[in-house]
Length: 195
Image 1 (cartoon, one colour):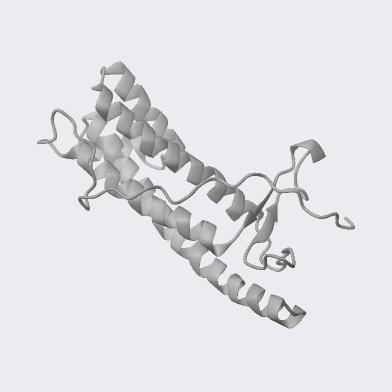
Image 2: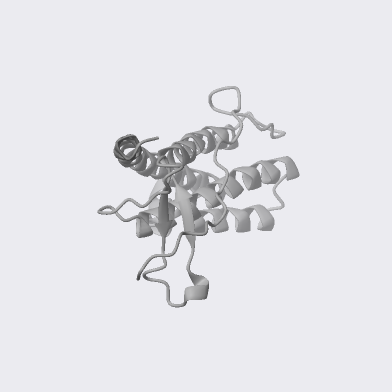
């Protein structure tokens, strides 16, 4: 592949990356809305009280509240297992989403010649210790998988507030569940730079 072809692919990937980052941001907002509704449902409070108590609660804290409610109310095992499956995926997405949003370099796109479809995202410049620095290869396909799983998580949580769903049966607001698409990437070794 010529240098011109690599850079053309990288430019196209950059545009796709920007679109997918925006789509992921919107899908993440949906996750936080659904978690708020689920927290309101399982806490058993009114909307006004939920707004007073849980306003500003982000995904990780909403999940922790729901887990506490599940434990303290002896929630039925199939319901808890379903929640944990979805929560595990949400937290995996949240970790990489936070990392990308806070560490992607919008003015520079560094990639390997053999793979212009992924860019390095690293906290090496801002990490307090070199040993703590992390780097991942992330592309628009990674962000698309995260977005798709955000949507799937939302639909998988819908059966939880169906009053007729007792004993609990896992399902989806769409009927059929889809397999998870996002798999957290392994940290990557980045080529040496002159920093």
